[in-house]
Amino acid sequence: MARFMSRLWCKVESTGRHLPIVLNAVLVFSITAEVSYLVLVEAPLEPEQKKTDWSTMWKAMHLFSQYFMLGNITWNASLFVKTNPSIRGVFLGGDTMGQGWRYCYNCETHTPPRCSHCYDCNVCVLRRDHHCVFFGQCVGFHNYRYFLTCLFFMWAGLLYAVVMNAEVFIVILKEGVTFHSIMLLLVPWIMLVSGQVTARAFAFAFIADTCVVGFLLVAAFLFFHVALMLRGQTTREWYSTRQPYNLGALANIRECLGKYWYICWLCPLIRSPLPGDGINFKVTGSLEPMK
Image (cartoon, rainbow, N blue to C red):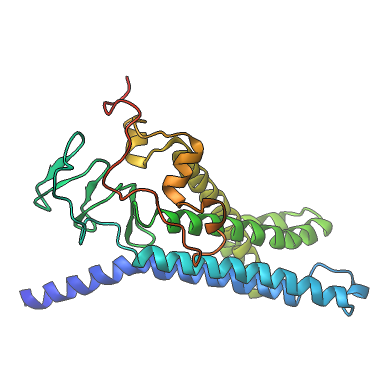
């Protein structure tokens, strides 16, 4: 009985670990499908324009932009998960140990500066920023570029979805700001259960609300990490108010995104070698917390 419960718990834990990834994928593809429907079926064009060449070109441009962002999100997310940010397979010995090195009793090895142990991954991560629960992976030195680029295209995609769904809001407002329309936008679930709206209207309102809330959350998270990148900090260093690795805005960007930082964010296939190794960092300030 104890062995059965142990196996059952392991399966539940494994499923719970992958659940955020599945939910994110469902959300991204649902929004993509809804926006594709808006573009193809309810394109914001005048009736006389819908049968012209401009209509075809307009739809093609929108669909290309939409699936370009979707491709970048999925590809960067895949590379982020597959890229190992930990110290596994990294040679940490030699004569390089000095200031900032620590001993990790969990991994039973000395670890370089900015490296810390993740109890979710059960390993030390080079230049660890935080553990991303949405992907079940730590954000570290080797995969920070994919994390930040994925976050950027999620923000851009949600902004695009908000703009497209704005047509629905405009239609509702043209019909008049009524109690019914306000309730549909604020509490679509209650309106559906009470039979006040159709399933189609509920789907539009729910996804539109999801896009707006998601856009605001992702925007806050993205701008926070962009600010950290410009300051040469990780989330852990931001909490401790330390800024000992600030090389200047341009050099900090290059440290995170690599040599070709100005173009690598357009496509994950563009190689952009990182200038460092995740072990040795140039110190420009005090390693002690600022008072």
